[in-house]
Amino acid sequence: MGFKNGTYWLKVILEEKIATPHIVFDVPESNIHTFTIYQNSKEIASKNLADTHFSLLVPNNPNNAIYFLQVSFKMKFIFR
Image (cartoon, rainbow, N blue to C red; front, side, top):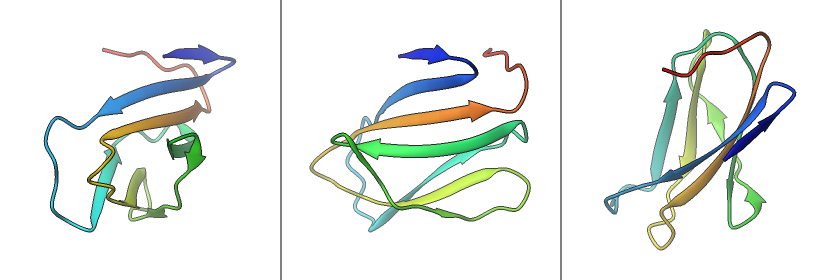
């Protein structure tokens, strides 16, 4: 969606409904400074499951499959 000063906004749309109470956003990148997940313009409480990268456990909302990720990087990042 966009970036500013090392902070990127990404839009994630889940293609299938998931019947579990939680989902995990796993980002195996050690260069991330902060990682925040939003839904309906509100920050979602999350729990980091990993020590070396961000692997966030968030509540699943089966009625809304759209998530916005705000990611700030410590250094330069290249999308592939």
